[in-house]
Length: 314
Image 1 (spheres, rainbow, N blue to C red):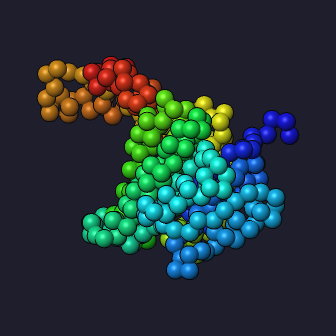
Image 2 (image 1 turned 45 degrees about the vertical axis):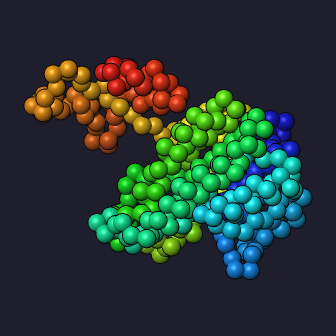
Image 3 (image 1 turned 120 degrees about the vertical axis):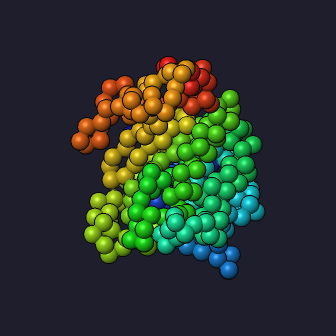
């Protein structure tokens, strides 16, 4: 296909690529010509199921190398970047997919050491890999970063209650993605976030055997996340600092939206009460927003527009 999105000559790191969404992304990137560093979680023997993915890519004629280690370990992140340089001579794409979940720590019982572990993997890990990859993404001139967030960050209740770790750590990735996008802009580096819906190992762990879990398994193949997200990894991707809901054949942009609201130099609590409907804005029975909402801009993308919002006008 003449207009097929290709990645020939480019090198990518995919974390948590031994299974699920990460494996699907690694396989598709390799199929489209990318050279892939396949990361799998730490094993005492120094290698794990990431080697099966590497073997699968090589058997299909692709180029891949495995790096075993947790993204929570800075040495492992540096080893991934080094592997890309040593084996492929460059690094163009990083996909921060590695993750684990916890559904038992309830928000009313937090914090606990559990949240420290979640933060190390979901927030610190992507930061460490970005730091290790930064000079090579700069050299590429068209570096791409994909962070895997979660719809859980918007609020979710498991069978144990409202969680106090996973959803909170995933919510930090919105800010992290915007900061990466801002820093990368002058170097041709683009960073975006996807909120995947897929029947992954984590979903199976949390919801396997339930009605919701069965529905996810039937309708949300991890491979569909890879298909939808591939364009964001390509050199033709036109956006940065954006968020996308992806899964089951659907892809849609997600924004932080603001109502025009009110602006009153003499604002009082009573004014807030009286003008509450203007602050909240219109919303129908299906929670669809009415007129008067707009995307809240990022300072990294449009500082002037951000200032106007804070000043009481678009």
